[in-house]
Amino acid sequence: MALAAARRLLLHAGSRLGRREAVDGARRFANKRVLVETEGPAGVAVMKLRNPPVNSLSLECLTEFTISLEKLENDKSIRGVILTSECPGIFSAGLDLLEMYGRNPAHYAEYWKNVQELWLRLYTSNMILVSAINGASPAGGCLLALCCDYRVMADNPKYTIGLNESLLGIVAPFWFKDMYVNTIGHREAERALQLGTLFPPAEALKVGVVDELVPEDKVHSKARSVMAKWLAIPDHSRQLTKNMMRKATADNLIKQREADIQNFTSFISKDSIQKSLHMYLEKLKQKKG
Ligand SMILES: CCCCCCCCCCCCC/C=C/C(=O)SCCNC(=O)CCNC(=O)[C@H](O)C(C)(C)COP(=O)(O)OP(=O)(O)OC[C@H]1O[C@@H](n2cnc3c(N)ncnc32)[C@H](O)[C@@H]1OP(=O)(O)O
Image 1 (cartoon, helix red, strand yellow):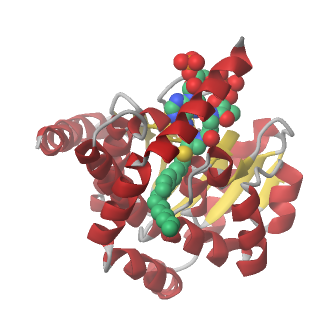
Image 2: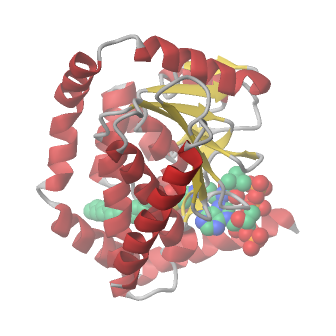
């Protein structure tokens, strides 16, 4: 309930801000964790995640992300969005582990509902989505990129991308898996999901997780030039084609959203799974020390 109220407030406040700044030409609206700028080529917004240190998708971050997308979808002048990160070296560390560890079942259910909501909105968006992957992109971070129509990644061997859930002792849900299969094919997805592979850029390109690699300082300019190419296609034919390609995958979740929330909640609540998450979080801490 509190989140629904926050969402209404943010939508309202955001639209007022958006209108005021439109007077200056370039528009900009921001929540705490997501910044949206509509400068540059007409009809294109740049959405930057800024939830330091690692852009983990906390409940608040998911909510703000979803609201920002909703606002852009409602703005008929926007045809494309470049999705990127403001956190140096990190695109997104994925779902926030602290939302899935040591909480109660009601919290898990609420969190998962919001994860589903963001995924459905991104994956079925009518807008052209291009990701400018300027850092590490494990699990939910990779999920965000996979939702896009085109992925440009910084060619820095320090950055990896992939669905690594099995390394954490958890399981990617069927709709993560479906989208992976749609993107890289069944055999590669089967192997990468079981091994929890985090691909360095060259391998990510080879297997098709990303579409193009560029030097780090060229990620944004390349994303813009890719966007220009996609903008040249008539919206109605591109959108109908996208819908034809993606609808069955999205519908597969839509028809069983409640059951998927129940599955997630009971899975993540298990002692054995909580123990695995605990160990993984400890490992992350130890890495530092
Ligand atoms: C029968 C079958 C039934 C099936 C039913 C299925 C149901 C569904 C099951 C569940 C599905 C869940 C799907 C999950 C998806 C996810 O996205 S899980 C998250 C996965 N993410 C990761 O593994 C990334 C972990 N992080 C890292 O590898 C590194 O942090 C980094 C991103 C490479 C950055 O490294 P570096 O710059 O060195 O920073 P760090 O020092 O490691 O981290 C800084 C602090 O941030 C914390 N942190 C990192 N990642 C997360 C995160 N994802 N969530 C929360 N917090 C994170 C890290 O612990 C550090 O914290 P402090 O020590 O407090 O500073």
